[in-house]
Each structure stands twice: as C-alpha cells, then as structure tokens.
Image (cartoon, rainbow, N blue to C red):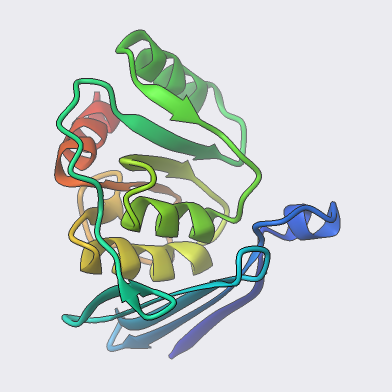
Length: 176
C-alpha cells in the first residue's frame, strides 16, 4: 500500500508559508518499508528505507546525541484539548525547551531525525506524516511510536519520538 499526502501542512501551504511537504510511504504487510518527505522551501528530500538508514539529499542523517538535562521538543498539538495543554505545562515546568511552528509535521519529524531537535510530542488528526516520520526517525537511530510505546497504526492520534533520552522521557511522561 502506498500512503501519499500530496500537501502535508495544508494550512501552511494555503497561507503561503514555507515548510509544507510532499509525503510518500510504502507499506508492506502494514509495515513502513520506504518513506520520502520533500520540503520544497528548502529543497530537502528526506528518505529512509527499512534497515538501510535515513538520508537528506542523499547524505546520511542521525538523531542528536544530546545528554543535557533540558530536551528540546517540537510540540505539535493540532487539536486543542485540555489534557494536551496540561502535558505541555508539565513539560515546561520540567525545564524542557519547546518549539512550536507551522511546519508540516513530517518536516518536524525529519528535523528530529537530522538532529536539529531532540524529540517530538504529537496529537494529530491522521497518520500520513507519521507513517513516513516513524521510519525516518527510527532509521536515523531514534524511536517513534504511539504514546503507549507501540508501532503506530492508522487509528493512533498521539505520538512520541526522538533520540533515546528524549523518547524515554516523553514516553514515560505521556503515560503519567
């Protein structure tokens, strides 16, 4: 099965802003085997193939190796909800540096995979970008799962990912 999101970050695209994406994932027996995310604004093509690594414009990428206490988090909460707002407040109280932007979720996942950010917390309406993002982050040496720590499936709406330290903190935190 091919999963294609021809304009990931539709509201960003419609507003004339950069960092929307074209996202393609190939699933075999429900497992993502190939993923590509293209950011036209930066002319960056992120790709990953199962067990073969993750790349940006053909150059191998990997998640950050941040051992600091503070973890940068790209917090994508697209549908406001009290529970998610409380999670963000707790992360701020813990001293986590958070960044929010209007980028396509897929681009944010690629930036985590490339080590620009350490982790990501997401609540979203569909899983098109997450299918690609999960493979790209995992192939870059990180982890990306649903909030319960399982491989993502189309019904999931809450996700965590990042380097090992960020992922462990965020996964455990999400459960609290």
